[in-house]
Amino acid sequence: MSKKWLFRVCALFLLLFGLICTPNFSFAQPSGKLVIFHAGSLSVPFAAMEKAFEAKYPDVDIERQAGGSTKLARLISEHGKKADIMASADYVVINKNLVPQFASWNVRFASNQMVLCYTDKSRYAGKITAGNWYDILQKKDVAWGHSDPNLDPCGYRACMVLQLAEKFYKINGLNAKLVANRPEKNVRPKAVELIAMLKSGQLDYAWEYRSVAVQHGLKFITLDPHLNLGDYKLTPFYKNAVVEVTGKKPGTVINRKGKSITYGITMLDDAKNKEAAELFLAFLFSPENGLKTLKDMGQPPFIPVRTTADGMSKLPLSLKNVVEVRE
Image 1 (tube, helix red, strand yellow):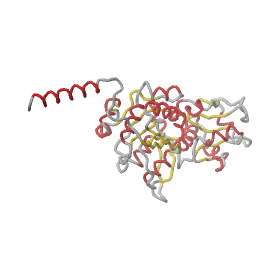
Image 2 (tube, one colour):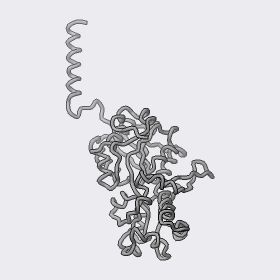
Image 3 (spheres, one colour):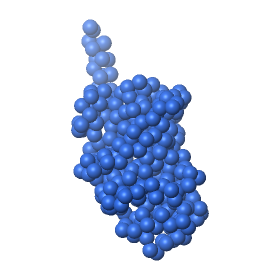
Image 4 (cartoon, one colour):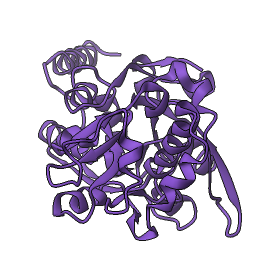
């Protein structure tokens, strides 16, 4: 190689080195549409994350679809709907509906707990307590509801709370008595639909996640930890609750067994915008960004987020350093 060409190569190398070391330099900024399906209970924090992420990466347009986690997962697995990211209020929904055919890994990133929400307009609002809520919900003039267990984890978790209450308070037949006073019209596809019904006075009480209650300024009853599904140490007790829901195929059913509430998220294998998806996930998993947003909005995050050893082996390289292995 001539001295002239050697000089040019060295000059080019120095130029590239200088650019790489320049703050905020990137060879290519992410761009395009980023489609995120997520649980309805994540609507408020994900809206805040969308705003912050798009400010950081202005060429990315996040398109979110919120709904019952099971329903959204089935839109992908059974109806061919396309998404880059799927976030579920129950990480098991991802395992059962998307892994391994549509996704390769599942990261657990947050917890929550069940609460009974109400407003100042609710009947017996001044009398209800953590010790008598199950008596109030049996009153004939009280309207209460929850989301559809077949479409939304919050729905089958509400049913679990009722079953656990019967065992915890040792009141035979309590679950059946409570359900008998809850008409089918008060079972809605998504838990967030119940908020409008509460505020309009159509419902007196509704089962929601604590984070949702905090984000929407609702009053709520904090339940004993044996009932609220928020303490992983009580999972052996939670397993006493079993709720039957519809399976993947028509006519089939699945038994959902009680356990502590754990949210999961994955990137779909056929994601069209993997670059932006990985960056969003890194943003979400950051204690200074996404996880802080969750914490500030009443939802306890896992710091660091976690996955299984098999999940870690399949994670994108860019995410491995912010995720820990925990079976």
